[in-house]
Image (cartoon, rainbow, N blue to C red; front, side, top):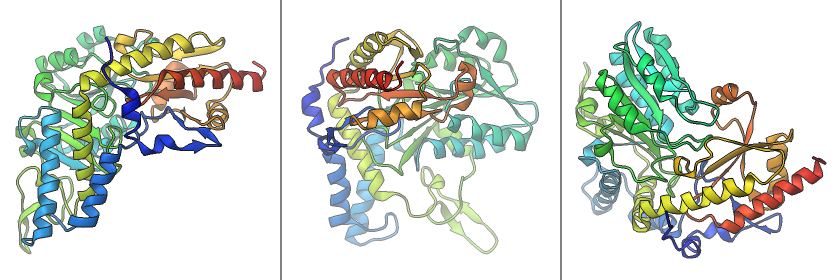
Length: 411
């Protein structure tokens, strides 16, 4: 798998990579938390605010019509990016978390009953656990978890016993934000549908890094965030099958999500606006549209190829360090651009602080996946995550920084 990305050229598109931290060149290895933004995204949002800002859907004047065209144009770009059948299936939210909450508290409340089951995996982000626990408590449904083994692989054999007629929905991340595991979602979707269950894909890590085709996958819902895919914060997406979205009640009430309001009640707007109450994140949607254009221009196959090369090199280099334990798959073909590890008995927060003074940004903690860390028998871990602008030399700098930490702690 050979990368066709010109990484030096890509890096020139990201102004923040010129920064220095503690008088050292910035080495940004925290893209799984939030990616950096290319100039085209920054300029798209800046241009909107400078020349076109007005509220959408509500005016017949020129600025409102221009803003609406940009806002809805971004929706069409996103639909094409994930190969949705219609842009009406693209719901703007604030982030992946809100997208999953929308499904849990609309579809879940309307469809789950006492004794029904929601099947998740042990490696899910809190955002794909807590909403289902909350709705289960309210409805009497039960949340169960597919096991993940010590190497970060999903135990697909457990599907035979855990997928039953009681299973109403399976929620699974396409890529684990901790383990980096690229999950066998096609197999999960096929087997879940055979049992009559719906499937929600948490695409927060998958959509920014892997080619995504929701029609080919045949999933029922997919949630993802703009800020992890070169877009701005405050904008996310829920894609859903149109028939399901039509049946679901609104998530929030207010302006723009209604067709008619009287003192006695209200009638809902059509899709997608039924789920988009109030003034939306207009500039952010436009920024996400620009990010989608940028990634589409690079080509998602090239993005994946670059990350495959990067994680393969990272696993090779990190495995050389005495006392370092990698968490997750050792097969780069089944792993995204995430390298999570523990080092001797050095607390991840101490490690991150030492690396920060070398200009290197990594993540430290439980990464919003406490149950997974409990399963692995650790309290916290360190995570270096890579993206389209990551260089091999930056991985070498990470390794040098880890050796420096070992020296400081005399390990």
